[in-house]
Image (cartoon, rainbow, N blue to C red; front, side, top):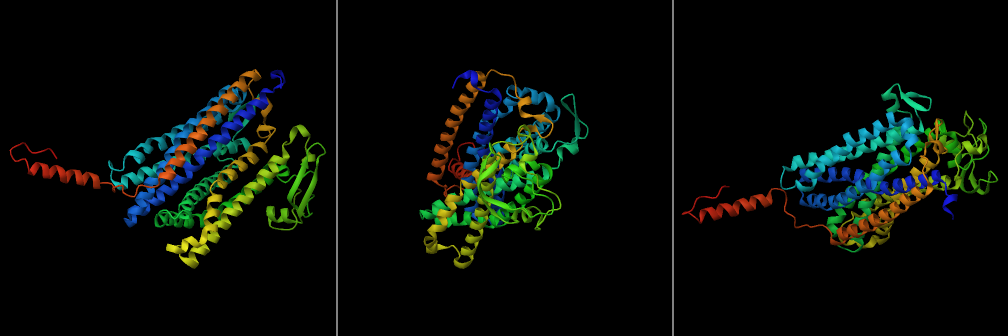
Length: 481
């Protein structure tokens, strides 16, 4: 393909998609795993069970690895707003930039400040203070999620100000931050990160159980995961349903793309739900489709008929509606299917736990279950990525919904320049990815160090040695202890 035929806007979108999709892999685990670390460390403080302490030390290694790669992979995203999307930054930067600034100064700095204590403070600060540091790390990580979701939700439903000559003027910061999409979107992402992290931890624990390696140790982590997942997984399905409802009310074109719905369903008419379809954008129809009668009406309003119509894609001109309908359609269904699978897996495992106790030799009888958990490990990532594809690709052709088009928000750069930076990021992220796999696999293969002394024990032993040395040297000056 000749460079002259390349489109700068398309290349800039591909570059941002690459950075967003890759970067998202790492904060998803750190934000969710930080809450698990708070729980597991709290259990150690409450029960004094040394196993919980060793769990906190083991899983925090994976947390640190993900945190480091997340920071490195996220830096290019910030630079793109000024380089590839300068008109966008000029138009909405007074508000959008402020929220990203809040994320950096409030959330990331809080997380990074206490992370040092969490990593190096085991033998240097009291256990309660270390736990408080872990809580601050978790709070900072999830506060970061709040600000990012608030900023992105504002792009979906811009409120709190007006556009004057193409520039957004803030009139009410609180209204803009608490835009109509914000609460449900943040809740959906919060549960997504936590659920993904729980099933990653559960999948790694199942891998150890399948090998019959430290079964008592990893049965304990799996049980903690199960108790949390039994609440989080079904709740995430419900919050996801609420998020789909808000799309119906605020972004009907996106809903039509999510359902590959070309013709409008009039009010008072049952809306069928498409199980599988082959969208044909050129013909504005589905080549093949399997439907369940009236199910979409029940999903949106819990009744067979809706009071308002469900608009089809043909209601908008091709330039004003989402494209890549097939990608949006199947990304949404992939996300839903994974959510249902994870919830079902948690329920089945709880039932097995209730029937057998998940103890001793009985664990060997459930290899099929451990394979189910190992399979579930990466599925949370796929669901998160699929959800963001629906969220962002479904918003097109708008970067600020109904106000600023994506094509108008991109910088006027030579396509060769964008292609060069895109190629560099592909190479860099490939190195990051394989480095993460290498070091992550080393951590998992090595396993936990169950011989680690509890905090304070090493200092007490050192103090005892120094006292004995002082007692055996009466002719010398006593050691300063």
